Figure 1 (cartoon, rainbow, N blue to C red):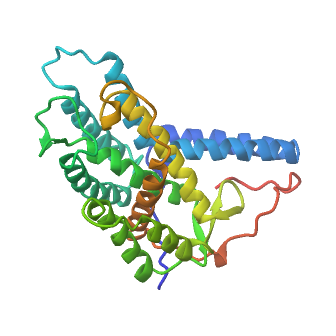
Figure 2 (figure 1 turned 90 degrees about the vertical axis):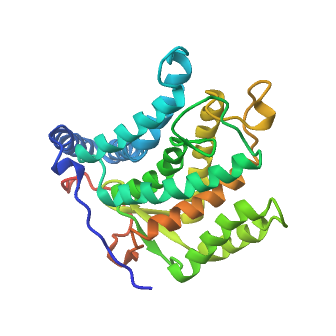
Figure 3 (figure 1 turned 30 degrees about the horizontal axis):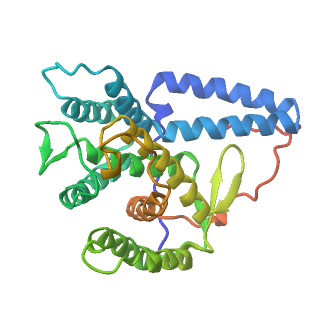
Length: 310
């Protein structure tokens, strides 16, 4: 497989407020380096959290909308809550692109995953896996249109975190293997209602393909590394937390939550893990994995040799 590196413009270059923040961050980083290894480590940890928060921007705004409309949206409003969520999600997408806070490459991923997610929603609601209890006009076969944006927020996160952390890889499987795996996972979400559930085999196949893959990510000056499978698990866990937010705000409900809310079963983590694989492979159609040959080996920052933050 040929690895392709695609350069995308930084939001800091076309959003003045963010450009000012980057300059402040550069000075803060230089000060942290001057105070020794512990201060540099603490700053890098803080920088990691800020970058993750920035990567979660689209999904975070969707979660804020789910909670806010549950608590404050008036029942007598002429526009239903679901339709308001759809309009708000579209406006967020337009605003992010207009302000340069999201690239067109990331928008392509969101659009693709919106289609994939909506198709799954139509099927799953038709077989009673979950329901959307409120009325709306902007829907397809009982599925409110904003639901596709909830799925798309996963693709948005992966695309953004990829760029922000300058992902490189060791022993990444080629697309000729990962794409059929993603297709098989997606089909199984439908077919297991009518035939044997193959998710155990899909877990094994995922482990075989990605078990040796290392992702190298740059928080500050150097690339750190971790097993890519561990990254999938951690992201799946946070998606499960977000799913609990969605059901607690009664945006959608599982059958066992109709009489009263209860936490989403931890068994759903497996489903989200597999869906993560589908999301990740879709992103690799836009961002082809780059080998880590150019990545620096991870080493602690040297306070005596400050370098400008990238």
